[in-house]
Image (cartoon, rainbow, N blue to C red; front, side, top):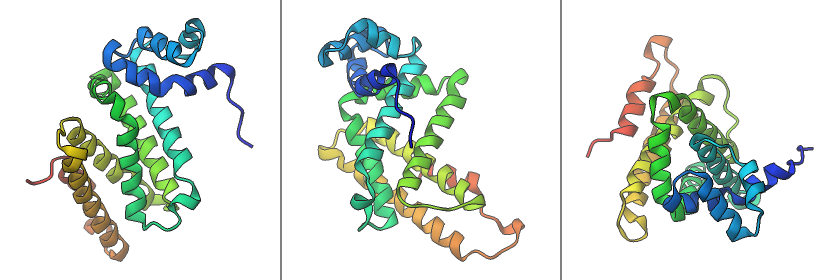
Length: 218
């Protein structure tokens, strides 16, 4: 049985997405927390206690809320009729839609996560989200496959976020097409791995493949 959240954890979960939306105007600050609290009828003093003081902590709480919303939406019944590629694609698209009202704050968050002192946290956060997506998709891979799947999906998700942040097309059509191409790359790679029986010297170059996902040819 899962542990019940503490009262402060419950407040953080309740407000985190709204904090991101208010961070569009107020940055990842206590002011954004207070604005979110006012919208939801929560005592601002309690809200401030529920969130970390630093920007990185507030960003982390926001990403955890996006993860939680995705997990709540993609129940076994929802994904049962989907192919694996569609499960992954729809989860990424769900995340973009969830973050849509906070898009400019997400841009600022990625800049903060890219700072040298925060890179390790950013990588850990991206890995966690990719791991969750694969687990919700029903993946039970272990060993080499477990790690390569999460590395490649982290790269797909990161590159899609970058494309999405500057997408001005209607309905984010350009991002949708970009995502389809990246998912196709990953599925081709997974199919190749499944048929691969070679020696360790023939093992695919993960760094080269990730580079292609991050900087795809035009």
